[in-house]
Length: 301
Image (cartoon, rainbow, N blue to C red):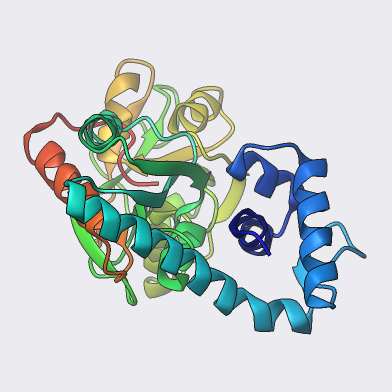
């Protein structure tokens, strides 16, 4: 049994896909499949159910997963112990970020950490915020940058980077364009263009609609702020975005405050409770970079 086989097995279990697991560990899909088949032969049981398009764990696989993760953690701990003796930080970190992330200070923090600690292997992945938070809470992701509606997401450490209100965006000829501000009920009278469920902005919007007992019509969903703004400019609906996201569209879209949404959209770093010198240093780099770096127009997905 080899550590790389356990690494590939954990990757398939967490990604629920041989293709995504291969991308994550940076080898071919046939290579991942072959190594897992070899692992299954060695343990004498099928670990991955391949009968559907989604790769899922068998009962034996679920029993093995915790031990595979523990073995990899022990390997990392041994490398770190040796690194401590020679003054190096080693190990591996899985870092998540929202889909279409354009947040420059986060990239700056990752670059600074990489240059300071080249012995740490970083795996980057993208997903919606809700999935990233789940993965952090489960220990599958070490640190993630997410959009959220909760300043202290349960089951993780967190640091709020940005807190800002939502706005409605309409083209100049829209019925709402002459108003100084809008309410949630007024928005519900028009089709909306917004982020998909699982994003911070959508969570804030959905909670406000529930609070005010209105049921909006979501005409289009998109993960990119620019796409949402472009669709609104073409008359497909009223865009709902975080305030900073509206600034690049001044002139072709009018930003209207939503007066009865009290909850802000947040951009936050969340990280696991794993005791890891590498993770501690990465969190420190992120704190320092966001404390001194510029903001971003894509703040709270």
